[in-house]
Image (tube, rainbow, N blue to C red; front, side, top):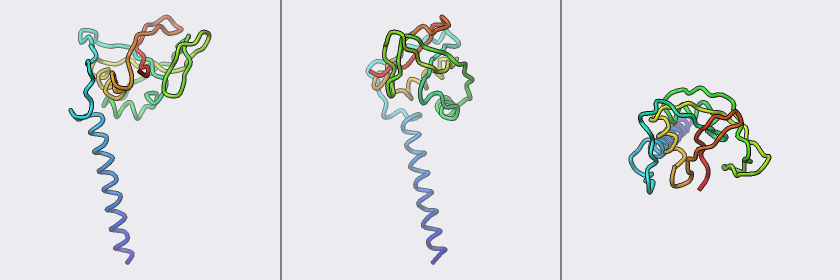
Length: 140
């Protein structure tokens, strides 16, 4: 009886893991499921670009999973915006604390896919408090 219960539990755990892996593959790696109306132009001649992140992309493990490599960050502040749920909105005198990632064109493409560029988010250029110009994702 206990052995049968254990086998059933292992089967459920395996199926859950397989379903999670399948969802991950479909979302982040498959050629299916994500078809932006206009793919973002990424200048392949620029070796590295900076991206300001303020939400889920601040998580080291998540970034590693999305881009396939660990990416270091530096703290940064975006002035003139306020965080609102999963987005940032312009607001005089407000600021958003976050991090800056320095990424390759391939990593930027992976981030665009994660953020569903053109479907859920748009990528725009902003100026940080330290004067640097970076990309940021904003809800459409």
